[in-house]
Image (cartoon, rainbow, N blue to C red; front, side, top):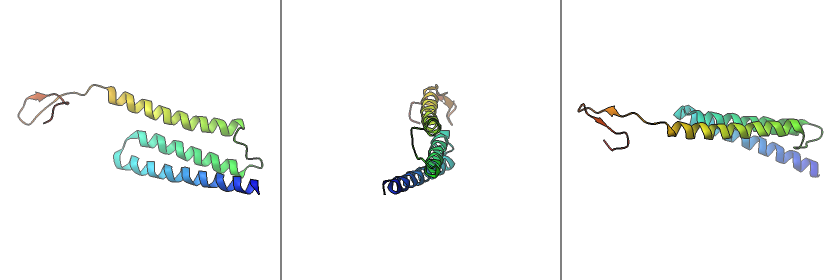
Length: 109
């Protein structure tokens, strides 16, 4: 009985990861921001990992392969956050307005 519940929960978590990945793909397609793409790939990896874990004869999350895949998906999320923070720290260039003068990007138009 316990094994059946564990398998059902693995399937539910895997499905939830796939759905979250689809939401991030939709956000990526709307904005073109690679932040969402990294998150989508991470959630898809985790969903595949859960599905593969449910298909094994001994679903043990502490096995090195499954643990390493989870580690990689979290590393992808960390890389996405770091790249997004580095992207926002780059200085913005002032551009000319319609009147020909330059104004700071922080000033309202």
